[in-house]
Length: 121
Image (cartoon, rainbow, N blue to C red; front, top):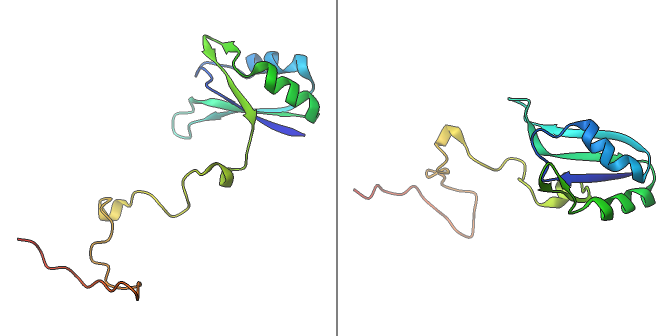
């Protein structure tokens, strides 16, 4: 079984349209269109699981770059989240500090000791 990523989809693309694109190449076990949690609107990409690896490879090469709803599709083999270099757990904006980082941090790096700083004014 091979999982394919289908990107650059129109937000109005339906599962039946994606199925019609991939079915001529082989058996599909699942289609998942990614949606926004809050709005339920499509995020513009989907995943297609194909049963046979060779059929999936043929579909990938044939459909990549093909237009659907006026948009050129990007089709490649899906990779696990950790491989694609996305956001790391625990990182990002911290609302409790206004996103500025912890200015009052005074330890934890023995080779570079930092004390609390005096205000500039």
